[in-house]
Length: 394
Image 1 (cartoon, rainbow, N blue to C red):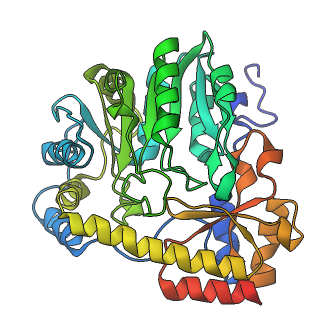
Image 2: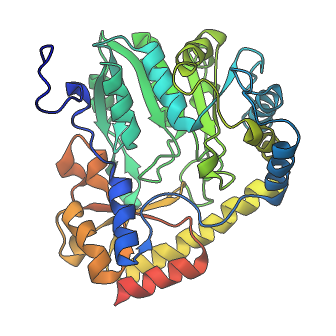
């Protein structure tokens, strides 16, 4: 566009494929129709009382100004202690942990800080929609590897396809496990292959582990951080957040951990995105991270009950229900119901059945691979799920 030419779309070309997110579209449709919203992945209950009380105290005790750029020491120390306690990973809270505005900012800052224009990012599709946008903002190129349902409805990938995605321009692998939207938990064997390829091609790994505690007891594998594998700590930036584990998605408190050089790259970008965030919520999240084990096991068990409730209801309503090993989500196949296009199906579902879901195809480059799949969220109260199931059965 030349100077003085104000016609057309002023948005830079690399961001034009990204319009209003599917989550905003479907949530607006839920409000318009009065449908039960099983689309967007946010809980309809508040987090633990200890955390909420700590936030209320912080609001009254001087935590309302800018926190330090890397985050309050109390939260960085709690993040480091939490990772040592649950995953056996050691990080120095002074230099190897940075607090971010949710995991979304951590992912964006990592990609912007580590990728030059033309660098390639290996990721697994379907992928959370912010991944593609962050890669585009950096001028990088995504190299997706498709996850496909296999035996028992569990998702997996072709090792040959993964190897073929790597090349001389590969800068990093972006890995989400437990995985949104499929609910897949990557196995040790799969992670070992990813680790081997990262080391062979000299690539970094950025791991989105926001669902690290939400793995169910019938999953094919426990959660295993990629950074814990041999040779991977020094090349892995590990990302998580408080939103999913503690039911406070609106607080937007996340963090990135890793070698000081990688964390510094995130911090140097983050300071020009949000600068700092969530001053009074940071000490409250520190309290939550230190809660006893029975909080984490109880929270996961409650979610598993709601998964089972929704899974049974979806099956009774005629959906083809795929495995959900973790996270907040179940993926379904609409072909048994005569559907073939998820977007068309989901746009009509609120009027037809009074329920909102998300078409999975929006998370794919290979749209045909996900065209017949629809995602439902079960992070809702049992009575809400029961209402949704009754509507779908009708």
